[in-house]
Each structure stands twice: as structure tokens, then as C-alpha cells.
Length: 79
Image: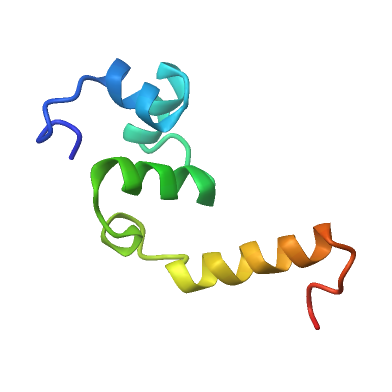
């Protein structure tokens, strides 16, 4: 998809904030990016998360973020 935008690997790696080696491994399916990197990739490409990564869904990610925020604030994330 980055090819359709005319972005080389160095430009795209910079946009999503990863080293070139990490981008190469993602594109070759040698590693699966963490959820926050999946979101950064989709944001940079201008597509919905589910278009590139059908799981977890955006709503599941937001629930996870909310639980992390609760935990960070000393609250029970499962309440």
C-alpha cells in the first residue's frame, strides 16, 4: 500500500517511527507489529485498521487503552 502512495521504505519507516529493519520484517511477515504500531501504519496509510489488520478491532483496542489508563490512575481496570 505504501507503494501506491509512492513512498519508499525509508520514508514510510520514518512516518511510522520504526527503524528500516523493522519495516522490512513487517513487510516480509517475519514479525507481527504490536497494536500501537498497527494503528500507526493504518493512520499513515489513511485506512481503517480493519482493512489491514482485521483483529483486534478498533473497539477492542480502545477498551485496552481505557483499561491501561485506569490502571495507570490506580483504578481497577476490570471494574
